Length: 98
Image (cartoon, rainbow, N blue to C red; front, side):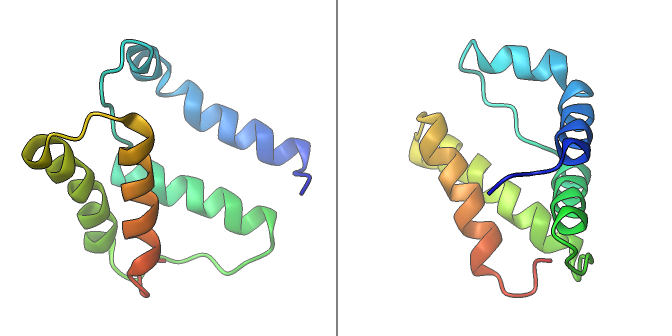
């Protein structure tokens, strides 16, 4: 699947706003996206693919992010890929997330 240059530019702008936090990732420090960033990235993807954008319940987005914190703090998970998958899975198992 090929994305338009506009898509890459918009995602790049989102990531640029978090540049200092992304640098901390290289130190394996867990930095989670904010609810607003998750919503904005979803909006960019929906616009790129001409989908309908809308968040029914922002609390569900926050819940998906909190599940990653819970997995790290209470289950001792430190693998960034596993934690990323947890966020992806939680975001896609709640039918009214977006």
